[in-house]
Length: 244
Length: 70
Image 1: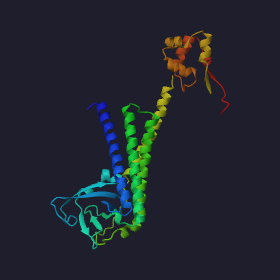
Image 2: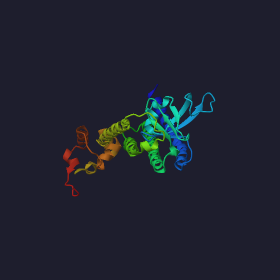
Image 3: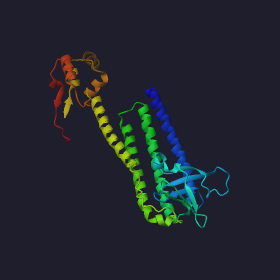
Image 4: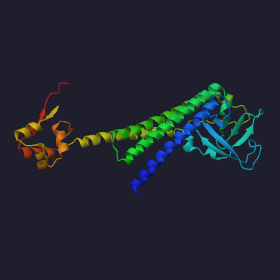
């Protein structure tokens, strides 16, 4: 595979990623706003981290009792940026248990030990906090992809050591750190309300320190350092250009 | 600050920038940067070539002046 072909491939991939993330956000926003006002939507909230998941329950055997049957295929799409890339807990079939009222669904993933509640069944202040967290995460994710697209386009145009190229890298670094901060803060903000979010208290009791992933923070810092190094490269290039 | 008096020397030798460019082997754009004082550095080899063609000393081309602003 030639170098120019791989650059073109990367350019089209980032363009597709930007289009996908924008459409993803635009399709989720009305759904979230709808759920924010207490209307029933298929959005699940991870009690531990505050992440929002969209789950579509597909019946494989035509059962009428879809929620109580374990033989369900779950098509889930995570709202959280970190989970899009790193999670593997959602690939397992979750166990479902109905609460006594029958309306509050609590699912327990056997490997992650995470508990999920329906978004629209939460109190309004929790919904607002989770909504804000999700919107900020989504916004940062779209901005990261936008700057990535712009960065790859400049690399494609052979503008390696240019100030604008480095600026894109810097913005990616800032947004990654901001995404981590939102993730980090939401975990601590929501932790006092974890017990109140669960209506079915008979779930798995575990003492897990669900610390937000620091991958984003590391990635942000590494890209930030690289941007700093490249900015020195830009200065050297400028010096070299103006040396007669 | 360092002031480049290339235009003064060119006028004294009655030589055009294009002619100097051809004799020294530096592009017109680079000579223009040098003449306008936008250059950040000058190589000894370049300075030597210019001095040889213009038959002058480096001090005839480069001059130090006290920067009033700083």
